[in-house]
Length: 447
Image 1 (tube, rainbow, N blue to C red):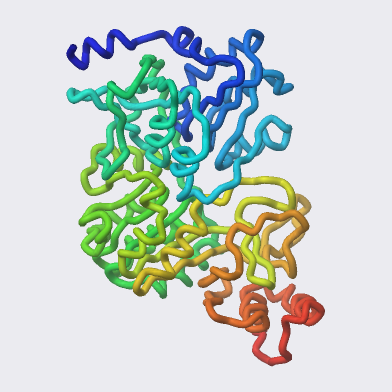
Image 2 (tube, rainbow, N blue to C red):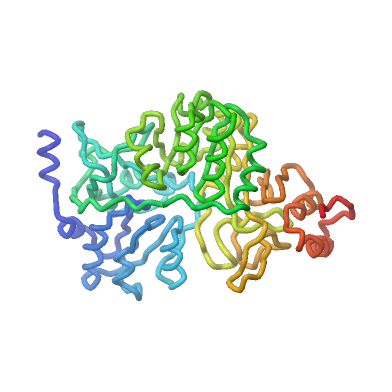
């Protein structure tokens, strides 16, 4: 039987395909643009005939119909590994549950522990060899499909093929049903316009980046500024080694800075796990042999990434306390995003020869009334999640400078962190540090 004949034999409408879901099943949807919106819509229509259906996904970018059509969670229980803005709204309304975890372990959670009765993921059209590319989303797609009892792929012609290193595709022989979707346009995440504080933080970090460094950037205004500054700098022979791509890499590539000359892991090619960004970025990644996708258990492995010298990671956080605990995913008990790969890259950069991991934040924010609120606090709020513990806290950056917390005592850390705070709050923080018994009287606090 030819691949084309097998394709026709397995082809179903979305309504026909989701009939395989039965009471009590665990269903997996994938991540972002790989979420199968047509199958999701048809599964939601079965609300009255099903019960106790649990669905896992990650970072939804469009309304999830099993949530929208079941506002009392009578049939469907929606769970996410990482929250988008939409997921956060669902969570605030009690319509979404968060799954804690270390991102690099996500494929292993599936292979070792989790049940997947039905996997539904959006993929590229089949190639001549019978393969469907996972396109912009590698992450843990292959592990999910390998564990699933039934695999449904939803075709979207806008999910373009990418070059991969491993686990970047699935063969038709591993697929049970094929659904031809409506080919919706892939949602973009436009670059966030950086403010002056973002630019200052980026400038502070730039002083630490060296020729030949392998760069990890995340999403946000400040990481994209780093990419822009690198593109305009005298730096050369940089590499892309990142969990998630961003537009800053395109800027670096177009400026001739991104040669991957010293990217040992990628063998001279860029390495990434998830591509989310503007149309410009998605077009750049597609069928680009110099940018190859890998699963997160590979990309985010500290052991693997540390094979690259001068691994330089720029990450974000929500707040940091005087104990040097970083919160990057919640405000008190309110879940905002997820742990992501922050721990992974903090450890991996430390193990890398010449590596540095920067966790950056603006020192303040404004509340809805325009009041200045410090993002550096004496102690995190009760219930606030520590995304990066103080035991692996290293470089920290605000618009007031960069400090390295590695190997410092509690009083040295308190002093260093206070110097990163807005001057308005520093005297109060000194008093709080004294109460917390993490202060040694010095005159080293900057004015």
